[in-house]
Image 1 (cartoon, helix red, strand yellow):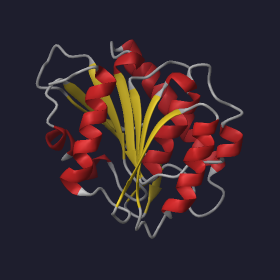
Image 2 (spheres, rainbow, N blue to C red; image 1 turned 180 degrees about the vertical axis):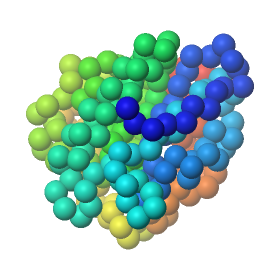
Image 3 (cartoon, rainbow, N blue to C red; image 1 turned 120 degrees about the vertical axis):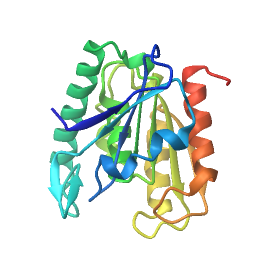
Image 4 (tube, helix red, strand yellow; image 1 turned 45 degrees about the vertical axis):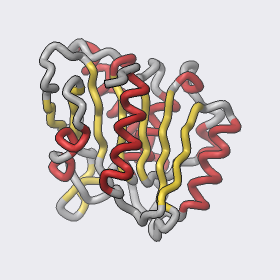
Length: 209
């Protein structure tokens, strides 16, 4: 089972959950600020570490070698984690998965492959692993998933044009993706970006507060 940290909602009766996946070389400790920044008192959080050690942090898949085997293995581990959360009372329909960079790629992978409908999925500055293959292997509920993909037009690590083409391929296959471009590099661009993410989460849960 993947190493993770559970941070309960202020509303202790809530069964709404967000998994947050870090980027390359980071860990869940890099996202301890995330719950406070979201300002969503009804949302529980599960901050998750990737499986492989990488220069003091962790990695979801090999970089820059062939990422596909690692992506598929990490997907299976995340599916297992989601199943475990379901057994603890956090249903997929009340669970959202999000991530940055490698974590964003894994969020899209889960949205496309996981056999249960989630509340939503968020990719921040993430690419897509083998999109041509992915669209041929979609789960029966993949086209029902709500997905937000945000990317920086100045991203020097994963070029925006490259990811836009990948996302368009997924959209052409019927995936429900909201694509947002922001004038930023490979980073989370403060409140301007957090507000977009926060609004998407509210929409996913049907919460207008």
